[in-house]
Amino acid sequence: MIFTRGARITGAVLCTALAVVTAAWIVRDLTRTDRPVDLWWFWAGQGDVGATAPPVTSLLDPVLLAVYAAVTVTVMRSAVAASALFATGVLTFAVRLPGLWVLGSSWMDGRAPDELRTRALLCAFGVLAVAVALIVTALAGRGAPDSAYALTPTRPAQGVAVTSFLLLGAAAGIWTAWEVYWGQRLGPGAYLDRVTGESVLMPLLGTPPGWLNAVIVLLCLAAAVGALFGTPFSRPLGMVVSALLVGVGGSALATALRYEQLDRFGELTTVEQLSLASLLFGLGAGTLALFALARRGERDMPGAGPYGPAWGQSEPERYGQGGGGFGPPPPSSPPPGW
Image (cartoon, rainbow, N blue to C red; front, side):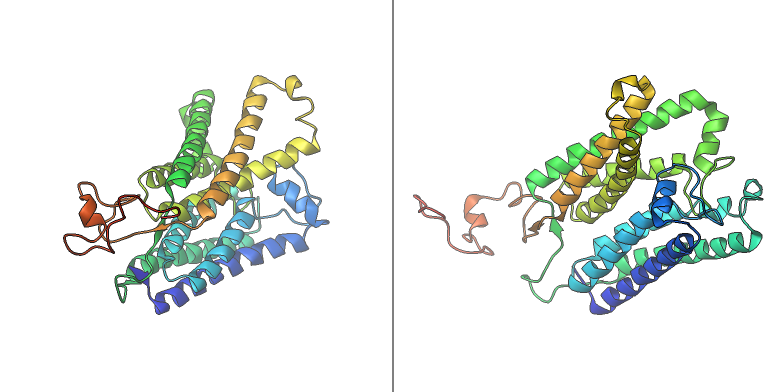
């Protein structure tokens, strides 16, 4: 299946709209911050930025902006980018959904002016609508290829699939373990607040930490299992969640370097050591998975399984004997380079 031209244009316009909204909020924060670098440290969780008004964006916003820009370019250049649109829509819907109850909740009173909260809430509704439109466009915009040799979505190569499965699967396990830890430490009531955002100090457009980690775990698991079974959607989904891991891990590395935590790693508490190690692993795993999945994948061939001819298919059928093949069988003694 290929992506029709109309669907590609629609998807690019929708991604551009998401990018514009996200960039507008970031620019708003930059204009109210004394120095741009201070906004970065705010995103990294390093407290006051010396701004005339509290920033409303979080670290998730620049990550999403980069994803929207990359997907917009990809959709305009590729006729098989439906999976990229689908992954972008799912990510956007998942991380922006809590805004519907966080922005209108009583515990947000006094943290931001009512006019700003109303504007943010309207943007949340609009962004969620665009995310749903992206998913619908990705599902409904596919058309049949013109011929058997038309472009088809590519699946990760076998080595890339195994690597992505191990890296993203490990990241999902580590993030799950941390949520179990926080659940035991905080107790059911306080942990529920961590998921819903109640009484949690976070930016106006932020996502509750427990909710965000749950999204990372689910997307990592879906991408890891999809890569293991060689499904085409695992490549864009894996790259999207890898970008999240890189953003979270990158902020942790910047903080560790700023406060020389790596030099005095042995002086940190056990929990601090494990937390820093987990975030740095996420940075490394996300970077490796991102570069691995960005490589050119393998195209589907008629009658082929995830990594080659269908199971049970005889050797003559694979090479054209018995009808419907793709050429003569190889010689009994293949020459060099066959």
